[in-house]
Amino acid sequence: MKKLVTLLSSIILLATVCYGQIDAINKLHKQLPLIKDSLRYVDALNRLAMLLYENNLDSTFFYTERARNIAERLAYAKGKADAANNLGIVYDVKGNLELALRYYNDGYNRYKAMHDTADMVQGIMNIAMVYQELGKDQKAISSFKSAVETGKGLSRDSIMSLVWYNYLILYPGNFPKDSLTFYVSKAQKIAVKYKDKRVLLAIEQLTADNYIKNGQRDKGVALLQQATFDAISNKLYFLSLDIIIDLGDSFAKTDSAEAVSYYKQGLYITQLKDYKLYTESITKKLYDFYTLRKDTSKAFFYSQQLLMLHEEEEKVENSSGIDFIEYALKDQELEAAEVQSRYELRFLFLAVFICVLMVVILVILWRNWKQLRKTSGALRLQFEQSESTMEALDVMNKDYSRLIKIVAHDLRNPISAISTISGMLHPDENLPADMKELMGLVQVSSKNSLDLINELLETDFDQQQKIKTEEINPDELLQQCVSLLSFRAQDKSQQLILNSNVQVKIKGDAEKLWRVMNNLIVNAIKFSPEGAAIHIGSTQVEDKLLISVNDAGLGIPDDIRNKIFDPFTSARRIGTQGEQPFGLGLYISKQIIEAHNGRIWFESQPGQGTTFYVELPVLT
Image (cartoon, rainbow, N blue to C red; front, side):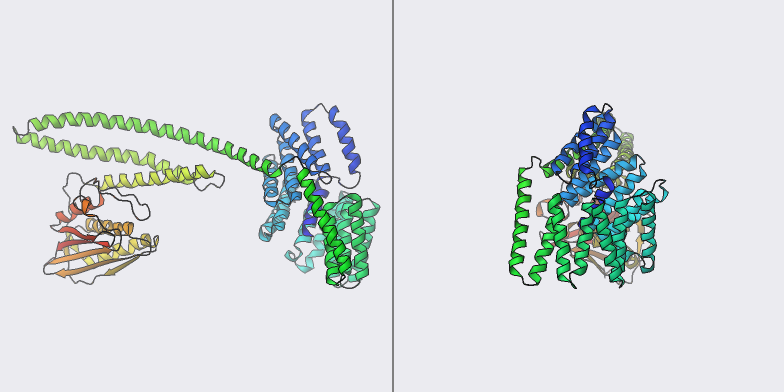
């Protein structure tokens, strides 16, 4: 019944669909060839489409599509908005609520862009009623509230009577019991102001239902009967059906003969006017009624009627020359292609800019490398002749290190920009799936590039670590490191287990030693499977502190064991979740440990895990 209320509301709102409908259609058909103004022609097509939909949905679609194509060609915003709204009604009647919601929303957005408040209120109300049909009551209520709020400033507020009516009839429980009368009266005053007979009759039905609900059954039934008489007297047959069904439902439990008479009266009107939507609904009520009373002959009769209705509907569907779903899909494909084209154009500009930037950087690097190679060659030839030549070569190596860091520093900003832009585009719901995947790849690649640049900036290529000496409590250092990295381990459901309680001090640079432990634990997280446990421990062996980091991960194959401490080593492997390695972490760690007069090594079994050991002298 609520679905019928929704469709009835659209009819009341958008067209004079009952009284004088045929005359209006014939009049429009005659006027169309005489209309010279293209914009008025589009409006007439949209109006005709709206009037025709109850009798011939294909005709509605035909005229709507003509109006839409002309409006697109003329860039007529109102025509495109009205056509989108008509398509929403087409799919609503067809029962495809998702597509109805899509076109209603498209129409609303177009009205909003034109600041057409009245049609915006209409669009929000249509959306609310589709949400109600879909069972999404919270969204429906929210949309109704939005419609009420949007319509507050309307100078011509005729639409608001319908908004209040639908809100009240669909969600009476959303209003305080003592305020229902107030809101019904509010809707009624607006309808009286604009002499809207349809809405006034609909409000009488709502008032009658409220009487029955509150125990005033006789008063409510009398009002429904009067509303039925008024609707039929004014030839508002479509509107009268909902009231007649309401009367039948009100007598269903108390006076079966009276209930059946109302249902049959409604069925007669639907058959006379060919209102198939109501025909099926009322026939189903009569079938259920007689089935409940075990009157098998009449129940069988109405079941046959239902079967015939379904067969007839299937024939109409099959004979229709329009594939509505295919049209909607092509429409979506066209919109998606337009969006994709815009994103591709933006991405093309971005890619061109990055390519130009990279070419410039590569030219600079190549020229510097070429110059550096020439200089290094000259220095090698003079190596045996002078100690000063060795010092000059050392200076050049340091310059090369600084150059790499300068280039890495300069690359960080544009790559950060790429990461930011791709991060903004990637969650966009309107982005096509293939573009969304591409944005994800760009984001991952830029993040990996930033990680590599940070490694380069933190690496001492001259292998001369500058060590600050201070007393360090190794237990506190390990606890701090484990605490900070626990969140990273949680991303892979891993657990960091610390077993350290040595009462010794070591001397060295706390920041650099923290970095070593950070590298070792991060590697354990990277190469361990999801849910694994990683053990970190420390113990004193004579005058040495032995720290261990043990994982149950991939292990280190024999063929790369001798390469993993090399800078930019080729012994790089992808982590268990695709984490990218850069081949600098262990090289840096080895530099730091050796600068502290310690040593670092590992033990590993492929496929069974790896244990890294760090040995440092204890402060005596």
